[in-house]
Image 1 (cartoon, rainbow, N blue to C red):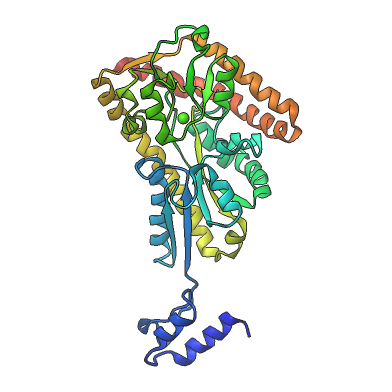
Image 2 (image 1 turned 180 degrees about the vertical axis):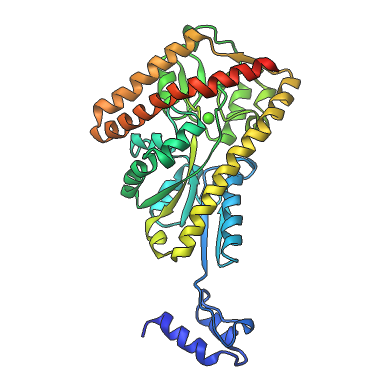
Length: 375
Ligand code: CA
């Protein structure tokens, strides 16, 4: 007899008897009978997961997405499925979330797939690439354009099943101590920028650094870097960059709509009861929607406050943007030339991206321009 079957039989025998709960609790913490359950004993499996996030607790937008996931999973399962969320550094360093889920150190992670392009460059398409898609375009491609299926094929190599976890929306170009009036002003610029955006900046002559969130402010303050990007007004305000750099450039062409991800260990997923799989999937979707909504609702007021602190908004000039777009395309094409598997993802993605912008220009962009002029 299997242990679980044995416990069920034991529970039935003991139901209603004093001390049954204590006895069972002592046998197996996942299997409890309670006085209210008697005489029909419920033996629904209780699941407790740990989630490692790549993000600090203080960012209630992005880390808050994982908290929404946990709250909804608990509520929808009547408390039978609980996920405890840990910010970056508490269980594992922020950039080792993929490894910890792959190895089963934690059951689930919240992260951004472009942190792991060193393992497979095509993972960048799960998040975003320079001059890629906006938040809604990326979500459309992932959920309805075949993107998620492609990405799950890549993540299977890492013993992971991935779920879209939300989006920051279009990011800002970041905080600069000196003006960028032409592409030549990027030469020698010491800038903190991760991922493929960093590769593009490097190609244009900048000196690229990758620093974790907590290390950026001191580096900018003491002049170790001349510029940094992070996310957008609401998150950037919390990290205080405006206190030491007053020029706030836009748009963040390297992150026009970065999609975050949940990673679940495939063995843990396989063991999950079917109803909990449905609950997790629904809660992940709900948390993703709430993350974008939080950014959209909180960024406008944060930008207003930053301007009140004397911050100057600066658009990148069209010649700068053109040069960055050209260099971005070159970086993507070079990866595709070097790796057929990457090319397969890239070409599918590129087709979707280009078609999407033709449509967006027709309706969304034209409307946004007209509505903005109205004031
Ligand atoms: Ca960023």
